[in-house]
Length: 395
Image (cartoon, one colour):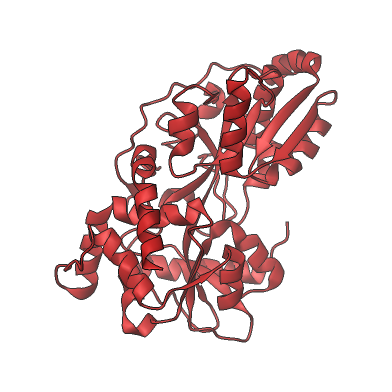
């Protein structure tokens, strides 16, 4: 159990990925390692009393609908199953990017308008917690009967409940390599990997920039990983710490920046190309990988950490006009008390992990073995702009 980090399928590829990732795990000795490290900045959050679905439904029918602002298209899949389960309640979904959602909610509430009931959002460099949760614009809703099955930190230590967790991590071509070719992030700064590393543009994606910000925040880990790789202490070249030094050396080693995660996976994973390159992409794109027949697999066992959590949080909105319908929908998306509710299905997908102990993942790696840094919202909020500016200066 984690303690501290704050469709269509091809059976052949699933088996292959499982074997490859299992080999990578045993090779790097990560099977029994703690899942994450770091100090969570969020104060413990109490869970909510149990409100029975049938009682919520009776009240929700009088409200008639529930309004959702969502960064994820999964909300539309939930809409279909929820409306079938609870006739008389309409789900209105507005798909909005995270930054735009924060702006929209802030403007509406400042004007005394309360339109949304539920939001589904990724963290935005700490801004969701700092600018929305702490001022009370949105709040965590996690009933006790569901909370007892939830992994930490999402049960009591996080500002919201994460219905699914993705990550930005390294991928390689399985036709070019029989096993993961990278075991340490610093490998990518060596001559062997010059011009052979792709990433989606961090300047266009806060989640990709969060990965590099995590390295700067956890610079001691990056410093130790450097020594593990090269057998000597790191010498900084005008940078603040080992995290910034890694970014500088990676970019200086011919890093190739593409528009998005899908572009990265396509560049390294076309069947028959046996591409020698590796790329940083989002785990949630694994379903697309299978559909398009790309020959790629993730590298989850990389020193010092594979990534930082990119969680999809569920929040109730303050002064929600359809509060009971909102809570009923939240329970539905969480999978209800037994974890078997149909509303959870769109979230339990390849490349996305549900942080519940009673829900079986479809991924080769279980949630508790994902080796990630803690997501300290305060630290990200404080440092993300500085890391972004550093990146821009290096371009």
